[in-house]
Image (cartoon, rainbow over the protein chains, first blue to last red):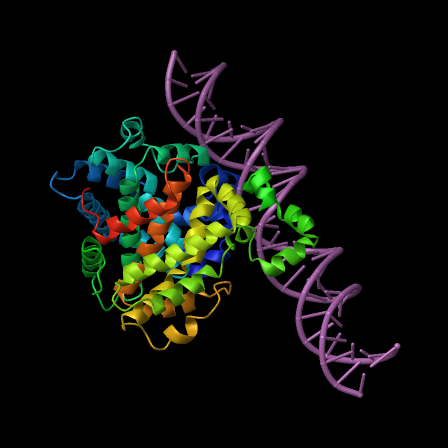
Length: 202
Length: 202
DNA sequence: ATTCAAGATTGCATAGTCTGCATTTTTGCG
DNA sequence: CGCAAAAATGCAGACTATGCAATCTTGAAT
């Protein structure tokens, strides 16, 4: 992350990363499936925590509310680790594609999230929800397995998860561009207010 | 697309594509920035058509409704070109990552869409909305330019665009996995009903 | 018909990503 | 201390991607 912040993401080679980390380039690929992953994997545990929080949320909340609060907590924790995340944000700000992947791919794991939502409203597949909920998002998965998990899911849980993740992404992107003018908390709240209202003309 | 449907996307090399197309590999890269792009670029004009439709929609529709209808039309047109799109769908079904990119990156061009929404509700930046609305999504753009466009946009238009695109993606993914059981039209309608209702517990 | 310039295509060289395989090093434990 | 599992490494090879210079096409002006 330090290298990327200094030289720009696209100029950081695997060799450079490996050398800076004191390992061989080959070893890098034992831990990351691709070069980009190393810029995106930050905070991979968030996914699991959010899932758990969704399951443990008060029973009177709607799934969207539960998801909103779970993600809010996660984002707050992120603000603490200033060091790493300042660099991370700096790097991603210059690379929109990576930003999308970072938020989309990890804080999310949409399918896993959808399973949590499904279990919460009792519409999920008991086959998957419990054991799968704890699996790390670092594990790679074949397209076939993902498809199998998707098949068991209803449209609604899938939609809540996907839209929730999207909302967070939009909130973060919107705030990133105007850090000085507004507080993230406000952007975040407003975003989910729009959503819960069904996105009527404002 | 034919090669990918037959052998699986990841086994189709640039050399193979180029040879099948009767050009050199070098020429391939004169037209596509990356190997993946060739699997994603299908229907790149959709983006512009959707934007236009959003602008031209009846005044009594909410932005979300306008977007919903615009996308519905687009998806219907897609169903016509059975040949190409059957292959395309087949290819993308085996590669979730490409599916996301295909829908996310092109039918969308979220920022462009957000500009259309912004102009529609009169909250956009007059600097960009008119001339930018016609620019092809095939053109690549620097991170700086994208950031500049984002800065001029409000949170709400950005959110409607992103959520709309996400909704379509979820609808398509959900339907792809159960093509035999349900009609796409129904999935699509239900998806946007959930959205417009604010995603309450069903 | 000839010529010429712009554009398209190509080959070649080079940098970088990623994988498989065999080998060496490290680690943990009996 | 010694051994077996796990981690790390080196190396070869396939593939993606870019810059540059040379060649080929095309179409318009003469």
